[in-house]
Image (cartoon, rainbow, N blue to C red; front, side, top):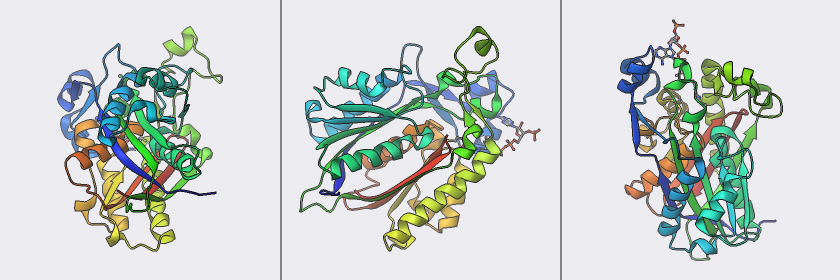
Length: 330
Ligand SMILES: CC(C)(COP(=O)(O)OP(=O)(O)OC[C@H]1O[C@@H](n2cnc3c(N)ncnc32)[C@H](O)[C@@H]1OP(=O)(O)O)[C@@H](O)C(=O)NCCC(=O)NCCS
């Protein structure tokens, strides 16, 4: 039962300081700046240091979101972290983040939905807020995919970067125009083998062989994922528009998952949205998986592109395959 509406009241992001450019990749692999730029839109990405883990990036992003929201960390009663590159298989990165932020007893868990992790996490948090179970929720998308990247595979190594984005969500007051209006989540496990980290779980536990055979890294069928990404993200946006009786012109901003500029442009074309309204950050950060959307959201709010009252759609897809979108008024 929905008792309350939820809204986003603060955002934050954090990316590692080390920059890896396409020109750096030229020195490491049989690739070129020209190929990467024209095929993906990426120019550079951030790489975590050896001693940086997901909860470290998540912590910095969360501190900024907490400050922007004007709340205290101890007000938080729910932490949901979307990630597929947690500090450990267990305990959850959400619990590690709770400890770092010094948040007293609260609900804390990770959520695995690939690059749709933030959309899933924010939708779950919205449900907690709308039923009154949570008053102040922290939602994070964080990823250090470069630690599970096969640096000898040019098909995947050029694509990923590291980063974290966070939002604070609370219930609305009667005077608020800001609110999360709707979300759409979906999954199709028949495509689970298209994007996978094969080893390290109970199917293929870590052994000397799994390490020698490079099975602990991201494997992807890029072409198939590409087509399904365009289809699923377009469908999600169309569903949100239709269900809420909106035409595309009503949308002020579209923030799609930043996996490939050509995917972003294809979605924009299918939706017939003004390209000026589509937020693109891919050239700076590459594909940071579950954190692309909260990072782009924070970038857009802090640069005054997204303003109070704007109507925004966030949409993503990822391993699973999962997909989903959120429609909200900021
Ligand atoms: C991965 C991706 C960029 C590849 O682009 P593409 O245009 O489909 O390219 P292809 O895979 O068809 O490869 C074309 C050629 O470029 C080559 N190539 C692949 N990576 C390369 C690289 N980094 N540098 C140079 N050449 C490369 C391929 O070997 C292939 O060569 P061939 O024609 O001699 O066999 C694209 O498929 C993609 O973005 N897919 C979606 C990925 C994604 O979103 N993943 C995350 C999901 S959350």
